[in-house]
Amino acid sequence: MNKNVLICLNKLDIGGVETVVVNQTIELIERGYRVVILAQKGIYTDMLIKKGAICIEFDFELKDGYDLKRAKEIENIIYKYDIGQAHIHQLDCIISAFPACLITNTPYVAYVHTGIMGVYSWFEEHYSDYNGMFNMYFNTAEKLVAITEESKIENMENYKVPEEKYVVINNSIRFDEELIKDITPPEKIEKFLIVSRLAEEKLISIKNAIEIFRNYHKENSNSTLTIIGDGKCTDSVKKEIQDLKGCVQFLGARNDVINIMKDYDVVIALDRCILESIATKRISIVSGYEKIGGIITDKNIKEAASSNFSGRKLKEVTIDEIVDDLKKLTKEQIAKIVEKNYEFAYNNLNIKNNIYMINCEEKRDLQINKKLYLEEEKKLTDKITEEKNKTERIYKECKEAQAYFEKQIENLQKENKRLNEIIQNNEKNMIELEKIKNSRSWKYSRKVVDIFKHKKNSSKD
Image (tube, rainbow, N blue to C red):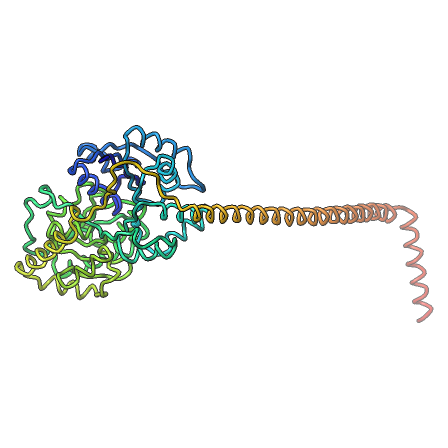
């Protein structure tokens, strides 16, 4: 069996997709696969190279249409490393990785990581070719791996993919010796850790997390907060904690988050970071994208895991409720919560049981739905024709508007010329009038008129 795997994603940096790839890569290497990763260089690159991965710096540029130049580069990589299957993790990679797989007859797995509604619509609205590409890409995939049932249903309804082509695999983690060694549950609640990308879409979550700590700190002045993460909203986050000087520190972006977590009592985060917190036996609080999900326990962990700890399926709780619960926790209660959470994650979210690989002995032709292909080609042709007609109509309207305004400008110029001539004539007349006023004959005439008026008035008397 060919055990050479190509993995495509944007960048080996901090983020949920990226840590999925890191765990997937290490697990595959341990299973004897040779893993080739195409991505921009990030904080995980050197670590994965040390683990045995082949990391090739690659820029998946987002633009309209298939990127055949980059597709050719990927095609050459597939042949060079004798790739048996490809795993395409992000939508940006489609325009170059998909055609490369088609050309080389390389079966691929399409990952449906997004759990945010409207992502596909955004691509289709901003890049006109994406609707057709999505249809072909998802329907031609050997398998589609969705992170939640909801993301599977959205994708299936949008692109009419047969349900049997999907497999739902919640975010999972590797419980290797390095992770589980020296793990001991916290004994008290004092050291808080927030882990997040400091991005716009995470701001509500981060503010929720900071507010939880702020309220707890009022009750326990010995408590401290550490924030791991980086992004465009770093300055905004720092403003949020100005009143907490002396008890907060920033560590920036890190690639050893799990090891850092072991030194803290409480982790407040979202998504995969919560899973990592559970795996390191920390008290885990879901800060929520909009609403606060609360402390993860054996009563809500199954529900929380089904939405990858985003908090979307959890009952909303208040900050005061969380603080009160944290204050009441004893050493024994803390141990019971984290041990039960760990047990659930080990049994249900262990990557050893949650990884999908194509079972193929040799390369085979990808099964392209010719009817679908022709339908998409027709849609694209119709769209091009529609855009062409629209452009021609707009051009005609612009030319008509141009002619109209040019005529208006011409009329205004004529009117301006006529007014200038009147002004010039008036100026000449005024000059002549002044000359007459200053002449001797004018002065004499005025004197005669004055005498005449005087005599006329005298005769009336």
